[in-house]
Length: 364
Image (cartoon, rainbow, N blue to C red; front, side):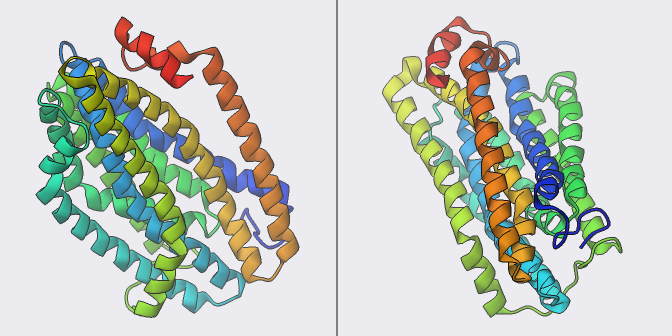
């Protein structure tokens, strides 16, 4: 299947580790996009608390945007791997072509809709009069880079499903490294504060997007990105296949939006922003756990899909069992670390005593 990963013949256990671990690390690093932004934002002199609350209001909206990338990417990549396992390279090529078109259209539509509705959304989703200006600054700039976010996340699935898990990890590492390097420059050195965090994120996502496109158009991949062969029937199948992961991610975002809204109204003018800031820290830790967990299963997906297409069902069952054990072990370790060191995760973002007092029981 690939130079280092034969999805149809390599032992399942080691194969899962070779594909799932890079994918898990990539997702963990991907979380750093928002985590690093929030770390720097929360430590901006004078406005740190309010700015962090504003960024927290944007967080679920940003995740909701990303869920559309999963709708197409996670919907199409397994279908493509199945076609490759069945030896049908032409169908695999058409799936990639159709998915690239859908991602492009979705990016354009989402950009327009968000620009037209962002003000009302932010006020309805937990922003206060004090935090709105920071939330609006961040979201406006982020939305202008929606195409980079959608294409890099969505198309990266088609690199991983061809067995190139290391390249998939590199895609994310490029963006994360740039984001970490550019954040202090734009936020503090250039004095752009929250806007600087958003600009750094967009530039980083653009770099990842360019890398993905160059690789998929290159000669190393088994199925190259091409144009044409568009089919509504094929697009419909991809959307149906991706509907479940889309609903999972989108519903999670909607729940967080509702949480921020309720906390803001319950806390009122005095405590609303503090509660939203605490929720932002809790959400950040949750992302640190759930995103790498998704990376494990995403990395295993090519193995399951390829062998399902090749009718090697015993390898599919073995892959599911092994991946389940890895996921249970990972979440157990993460839980123990949190219960032992909850204060550490709050201090990363802000050291205000009020946040520590409310944040520790919330994390627990």
